Image (tube, rainbow, N blue to C red; front, top):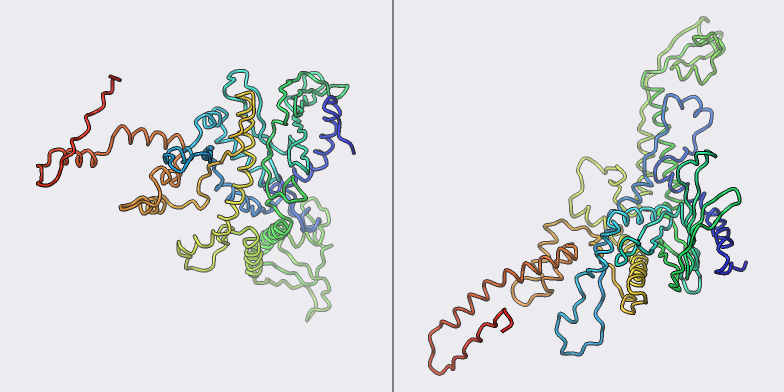
Length: 495
């Protein structure tokens, strides 16, 4: 099907809305599964009817545990421009080194509260395949464009499979109820390469309320796509079908265990010689067989089968719930293998002796590598968003911005002492392996913190170098050695 023309905004809205609606049901289901509010699978409807007012369905939260440990390792620290590559072999080191972080982009990041917004964007992308970053004009401050992070439940962007760029994007949302119709007021924003359109929904459908002819030449939307494939540029969730099958089975087993615990909290009693039809509730209504069992009473008709006839009562010993525990442990180990985390993350233990710190750290290797891959994928989206920021600021595309790099916090999350010990060894005595600036970046200090430290270093100077210089100037002359006078101090007032 041919795509609408750029001068047909209503056709674009309808086209993108249909595509979004086709995927919206699955996105909402993934969101409910992550929150643990999805309906319980596998439980028999009759059992559910009898126990729903007494036992709540158990959600173990494995989908949440599959996402949160990964999202917690995705922290953006800033952006930097790499070296130009045009310097000669005699260029100074400071000309070759990448900046600790771009001040301008860091300011835009802080102005838009992206420290907090980026975390929500990463979380939505991991759960619901993708999220989006939009860039627009800021009427209050033209030097700091407006950057927002949008949910895939409200936004959809069409991607060209050849260029892998966004062709058009649509965001739809609803606000408070209309006073007259008592229906939610619906709005939409359409993003096209050369214009942005705003709509509201009325009795006649979508009505355009305004537009911005920005003439960018590209859609000001950058997707943050999770687990994209060559044939699927729209991403995939971390909540895979095998993991959800194990999670649903575990939730069912845990709920069954609660039902069994309800039955066996008090030993079951049996009455031989009477049937379920002989039992009535407090209203005189005949009870069903399951209701009798739920009352911890087992009715066994056929008194003639008993020795001596008549009615006889018997009490059974409560059974163990170990079979449920073993099943949950087995399902949990399979789920931990799919997620790439230690089984202890899912609440499973391997005995009375806990694993050592080194053993636990070695089990995080898959999770660390997975986080590094997500940093690379999401970094492309953030870099594209910052390129759009520079375009809004300068009015033209910055060629250097194409080579922007995203600065991420170390996904391995080493302890403070481990990171400091490694930095000391790399910058230690003798010929250092890395400069102090790189060590500070490796320690996770933000670009603004690094710049502040460099200012402190310059203000404090190097006391050891000052002492050595003073001793050299005051040393007595030695025979055969020509003394080179020290250079006079340079005036600071410009004279």
